[in-house]
Length: 89
Image 1: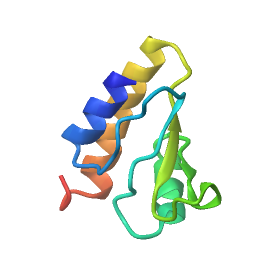
Image 2 (image 1 turned 180 degrees about the vertical axis):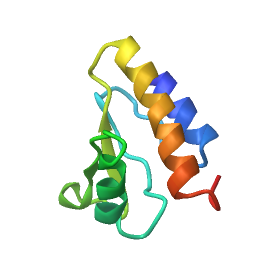
Image 3 (image 1 turned 120 degrees about the vertical axis):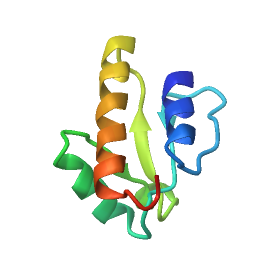
């Protein structure tokens, strides 16, 4: 969780550090989290819009996977953000 949280903060996301779950809910870098998550799919990132969880404009990331996979995904997340949202980075 700390790896993901720290990377999200470094990339400029608004996010609250979870207190003991397997998910984190960052604010999307655009108003429509559905559009944000669809763009992420081009990078093989599966992010879930959090509208159905009562968090419109946010998305859900799971981190109940191995640390190696988390580390690999963070490199891809950084590429996604820098490519699709250069003005935010």
